[in-house]
Image (tube, rainbow, N blue to C red; front, side, top):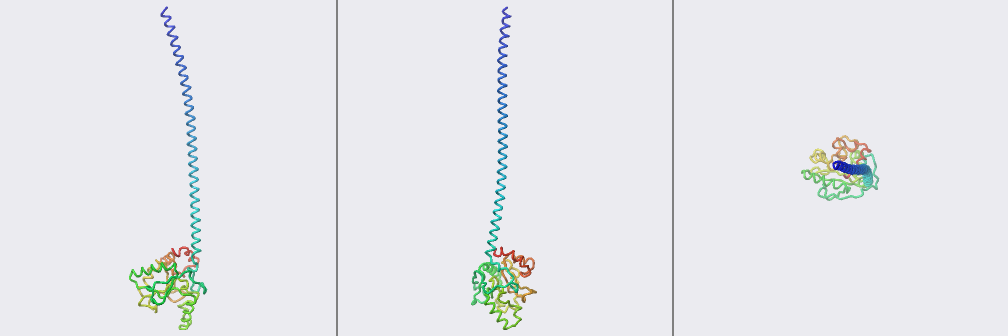
Length: 282
């Protein structure tokens, strides 16, 4: 009898424990489901956050690209404005063809003239002037020649309309119509621009005879372009006799092109020459 009672009581105890274990298991399952749901919600929230972040990053990158494009456009506009201002500030007459092609009136005078150092003049007692913006290029050329041991002097530079008229008249008195072969009429002389010089040396002096046979001329032929100067009237030109002493400043870029291509200033079309006005004093 006692054994039976013990079995009944033990069975009841086991049933009670099983019930509590089952309830505990159900509670754990409920908590696990809740945690899983929370994890899924958090995962979705995280994915949305990542998506938002990527979308924001893409928008930022697009905005950055747009700003970069605007910066390039602004730089291009600024550069274009700078070029226009540079062109407007440069006298367009300085690269025109004046040997019987274009005409400079009697009122044309360079905006600024600077006196050439007397040490470089063949005749120090007669002052010579040059367009101020060209002076620095001429000085460097003269210094380079001196460093190479070359005897280089200047016999003529800027001439006004009136001075050219007087010079041409004196030539006509002496040589008649033959003067047209070696001297420009007033208004057609490159010297009026203030960018042209006639070179000589101590031996040749003012006669100019044989200047093309001197090492002075050879040095100019090999080096003058580096400083922006070009020979205006080579052998065979259609304007005047060969003038190996007559060199005009046309800017280093144009002078370098003429030298490398074996051409001369008057070989080029005026429209082609005009493209170099913006770099004339670079």
